[in-house]
Image (cartoon, rainbow, N blue to C red):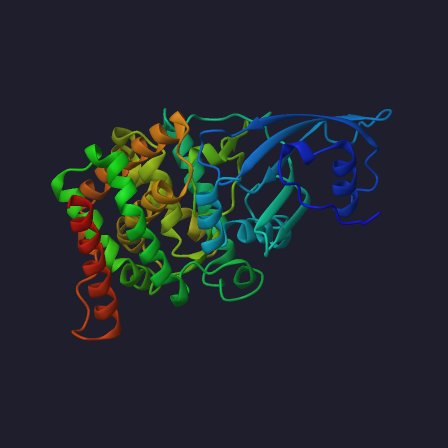
Length: 394
């Protein structure tokens, strides 16, 4: 029998025999024989790019040290989601994070029992610790101030661990989100996603904010270039409540869904969380204090050379990262689930409010040097987008 189990095409292939093989391939041959697997789908409507299954395991005989349940995460069967996941390497990133970094990073994530990714088919499987016994906070309801501070401290400790080291292993072996080669594709994917975003969520935009959202489209590559001139740390990339589990202690936090992880401007995670996982009034009341807490935590972890006002400026600048992610998600993911639509719409409302409150328009890049490569790409993108708008109206 092959010691490496095939990646399941779907839940029907997660059988007792397959689970036994996965445990053995992951170095857990000590786990007793699995006799039965009861599978249920979890995470529907919370924006996961893939299929997550909670598997209740029945063993042959006593198994006090073996997990009673595991979560098996698979690739998506939705064609558009698969296309997006392939384009920006979502499955490859997540598998690499769990295999290369999760076991020693200073932020809790599920224990990896087994993981595999197949590049040709873009198939993924992860067999993970089930964190279902920890507490959750509904992203639609939003975090309170105490929870928000705990989340900000956790990501500051995580960032400090890799501060300005993302060009070294293992970080560089996982993903560099600000690598220049990724900037044009992100801009093109964003522009291609704008039509569907406005079709589904157009009533959420004022005329002014629609113009800003479109302007970001033909300046996204330059915007990412501007972010790359600041500090770097390895980030989560989708740092929001639906990806978090809370324990009994004030700083007992676990984080899942590492598909968008990579080297990035560190304040991106902070802006992403505060701008989308808090009710607008809560965010307004605590964001200055939250940035101060982030800065203080960096200092306690030994990070030097960045001031509090630097953090505040980077926080404001990174709020456009949320718009990039929301538009690309609306354009490329399966949002047929009612909760997914509601979650994206609410996240969009919170993001638009934050962009206006923080006067983030200041950080949209100016037009680049006339006839230079950046100018040419931006101009071509703008013209192509304008032409597609005219065609839709005709």
